[in-house]
Length: 249
Image (cartoon, rainbow, N blue to C red; front, side):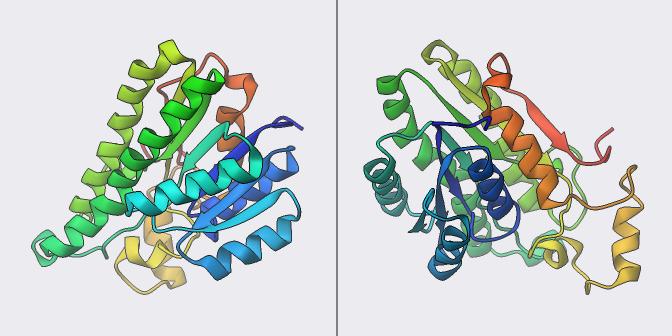
């Protein structure tokens, strides 16, 4: 019960890392808002978790939808103590000049603009209630980039640095901001990151670059997020926690 009496809003929580983070937070006593543009998927996760969960349909690249999701969560739970900006997207691994501007803009709208929108909502709320925690899911791609993903890499570099800067700006308000930087994970984006069919042979090529010898599992991210969101991490802010099996060493 490390999150007893806490409430959390988690974006991209209908699947992958976000889904497991929501499950883990709920098991630790939190009420959780499952926020995702896949409304049906969000409802399925909320039903699985039970009365402590709320499903909210939202495209995080749209500021008005983010505001509506935030307000809906506050209305249901009275306040929000933790925000996990997990929703993300990538273009397929490919030559950088094959990515057009529309895809580039979509990439930044989902991965970067979404945090801007959420910050403008969460910070005034946290100032009113005396503090809060924001966790932003960056990536090892923003630290040690792989070829073929230049524009995605740059968006996650922005997330990583934004997290550190927010931490410095908001520390006087007792608002902690931390980041999680996973290596490639067993999620729906795995084949997108690889840029080749998801076969055992192709997986091995990428796993061989990770010292601990496997991809990031959703439970790895959930465990890391739980620590950073809990009061055990009350003196931790501005860190980018690499959940990467040693990839960025």
